[in-house]
Image (cartoon, rainbow, N blue to C red; front, side, top):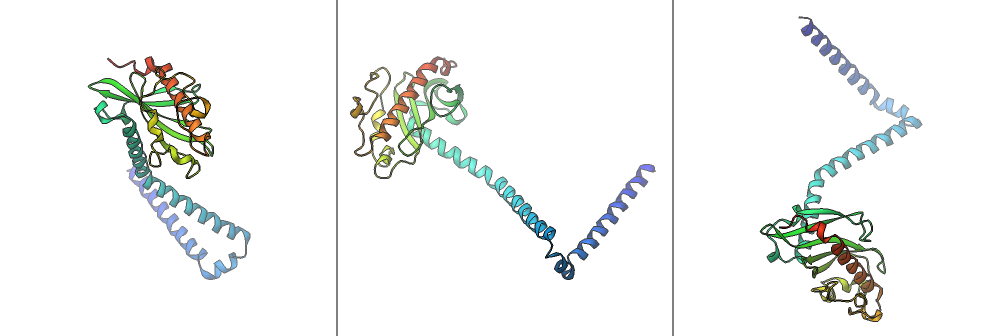
Length: 241
């Protein structure tokens, strides 16, 4: 009985509060009252704050509505990049869900930890791939992805993003030239340290006319990527039969 009575009292109080609030809101929104408030600084500040709050709510709702779609597109883009550097014939697993995190703080790959995606065939690791950065391109950082066979040979390299000069440095893109394919089959075993340079520096890789810095920095970054794999090869392949 007491519980029912208390509930009714609380419901009545809530109803009365809502009615009073509604009455006060109607009075507050009357044109004559708003006209009196409009010149006041507090009113103008309140209106601005209200619009800011509304904008924040709308942005939050938009973020919630599009977050899943954006994440899906990013995953699709990453999947496409990985497939370009690791042939489908080398794996029967989902690269995106089969990976290990390796400490790369000292490898100069652009991140403290690097996610290494494992290509497996019938449960055995046949290749790996990972993203890394050449931070010192001519116009800014150059993001790359590289696939490496289990024995350390490069399967493929692709440029994911860059801000290099159109018509010059952008020849690192597969869509602009075949230069990036010159890394296929290269490794730390079949090239000497000196050969891991552009030809202008005594190496084996072509430079671009009028844009030597861009290919030079890409070559250096790829060499660092191979060094990283060699250094952590045992750790990366630890779960391979």
